[in-house]
Image 1 (tube, each protein chain N blue to C red):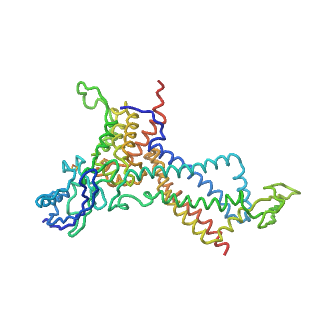
Image 2 (cartoon, protein in one colour; image 1 turned 135 degrees about the vertical axis):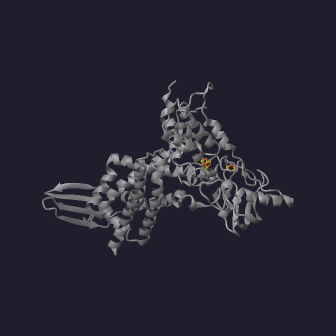
Image 3 (cartoon, rainbow over the protein chains, first blue to last red; image 1 turned 180 degrees about the vertical axis):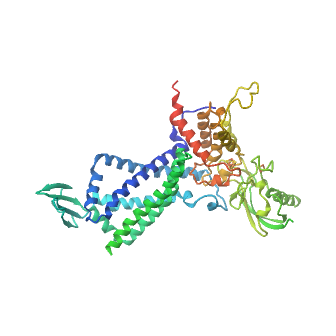
Length: 261
Length: 257
Ligand code: SF4
Ligand code: FES
């Protein structure tokens, strides 16, 4: 037996290790993203959400993680492409009659299609919010909160005022003043469009099926199948990542759409 | 009482490795339903021979489900519609009178068609030769049970060792991946004390050879497990992943000289 010291990433198993690790990292992001976005449901004219949005885009450690995140998306997609091409080449002549559903689940065989839907969604999603927030035109809002009573006055406009120089938070005479881009209202505007709402729902369905297979598959690839805990992993994959998270995300566009009617 | 069936076969015919193949429709009449699938093909072949035509070329040997030679994708399923059987163990009572049966060879770049329905599975042999063995200095026969092995472990190793190397896992997998086969061969040694010395080299050598042969990678669809005639489990694949990654990332560089 000869043991060659080839680097791990040159093998098929090494490439799958990359798929597994980037996939799980992206899963962990979903949890954070969902919890943060639950603030959209607060009835405070976006006060909590807008402050949170500023924090997430300007706090350095989070910025670092977000670049890792973008890298993970790209790496996950690129390696999926490499592996898919290799896998296609492994069967140059297909079957005339193929059994498909009789020996495996549809979503497990179509992770690439599901992933592509998610990728297309991500691009539009980033354009709707991330791009608009950073470089585009967002509405403006100023919250004046009396610290003693909690009473809040809101001054909002659809455009940033000409003297706007960036997010500010300060206290003046017992009144907390927050001046910010109004991402909350941008969310509300975007989800007035029923087609966009539909796109988001379809994408969340794709995400659900992708993760019902993907989450437990990532653990299998890592070689994790502890007799006692593998059931927990499968349960989390189906219930948390396959059902609860996609449905919770899908309620956001629906909430804003029905609110706008 | 046995019934008789009249069947329409759509069979893949290919003169040799280089030739372009195609489906040929052949009538199989008066087939007793207690024949095995291979016996049915024997009958069809006798008929073809009598007519002076080339008989259908297919692999077989033991005809009792132990050698792994028989293959055939029958109506889209490796080894046919029944679970846990090889083609030689499949009986014609699984089909009904007047049915059309599509018969194709295993399809994989690593298993090139030799002729008609027979494919070259020596890629599996080369994977085995890369590491599917243990090196022992022979000498006197050791006493049985001198090396204690817990029953649970022995059973699991035995289950892995029941792989007959048929290649149905590759045929079933949408990626033509050989992971179930390789994982069974790695597991049977990884679990036992006799396999420890070469444990991590074995996992690497066999995976390297598997990649070299041009098999696809595993996407955990589970089709292999569903089609394996002897019930090799996906847990073997998790073990192979563990053995390989452990070897590559931790064990291999443990030795510093
Ligand atoms: S794992 Fe099962 S299907 Fe694959 S070669 Fe072994 S016996 Fe055949
Ligand atoms: S001929 Fe031996 S297993 Fe079928």
